[in-house]
Image (cartoon, rainbow, N blue to C red; front, top):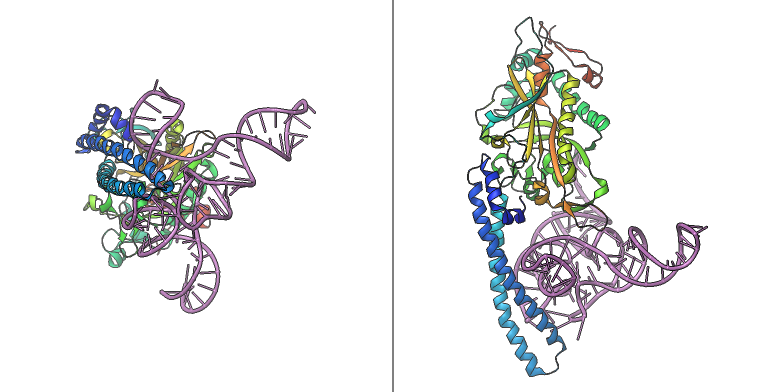
Length: 429
RNA sequence: GGAGGGAUGGCCGAGUGGACGAUGGCGGUGGUCUUGAAAACCACUGAGGCGGUAACGUCUCCGGGGGUUCGAAUCCCUCUCCCUCCGCCA
């Protein structure tokens, strides 16, 4: 959520910033919000005057001896109470409307974000490593996987339908190894604290991390228990410190969590249906930080480096893409994607998305900190980034490390997590 | 699933209709004393909205929501969560 005071004080500037986003309708909301805010304050002022009056007289009534006088005051206050009730009702409806509007306004882009209406304005900021030369035609993972007996698409579909697959044997082991290794890596080398959060959460958490109301269509929901299945560990991690006032000395807080992610993928129906690139369920290791406003952009750069270290350690070429205003998404003030090269399918795969939401989520989830003992609480800044999602780097591993005979060499860093195994070979070889 | 008991400020805990935004203790901050520290003593110490340059004023908040009342931490309804016991279960 944006700061209502900012909208009030610099509405034209806010609109200009919103104009650069790919969110038609956001600008119009600002005028609606200004109007609701003015109404809210007018009603509130009147209401408070009347409440002050009632409080004052009610205290007197308690002390009154004269019965006639007392009764007169009581009936006066009964009338006043009716007016207060009316105003309270008005206030409630205005506030609800205002809140609803505020929840639909996306975050403002940071001044450093490249301006452009869509992803074609994204900027490749840096590229690491060189695509490997193959003296044979590299095959895509959807051929390698089944040939190795480690990905079973048919049975995945049999069990759960399109966008599901089953990992078997070394595929399942590799998947598990990647999760463990990434978690360990971030804990040991980058100072994160490991967390295993709930995978189902209450609705308020979805608002807190700004998935709702905009992306409601994209999550699975258990109506009977009123649980929402997390589309990313970002949701529980954001809300970990909901309604808390943190001690400034504790910051930054750095968490890393593995979780499965559940997504209905309504927005991308028909896209990327081949292979394991986009499924309704996938595993991800997520990095998350709570920082002071002064240090959040430095933290963002560190997180890009944290995710990049994983790519480097796996020995796969990667690049950093800086998102343009039109491709920022709803909550980010600034966002980088990290992409790995996959020679088999011949594309750069988005394996990580790293955002600084500034106080956008903190305001929604009410996460504050006290800079100094006794000082007024301020909202923290929150940052999230994949470190990494599992299936796509797995694609990159299979396609980059494939051998002419169809076997796949396991990256060195993962071998200790696979009992020292060095190669995944076809079943019959 | 059944039966009972709870939820009050950073923490503990008092408060059953009116001077209570809340006694007291702990913790924290500042001070007195001291060469310094400890102890002792004194003072301060929740969050937020609105108005105001500010001092300050005012309102709201005692788990959430609703109700009764001139007036609710206190009474009623409801929801959520926690604890104890029983049953069931990976």
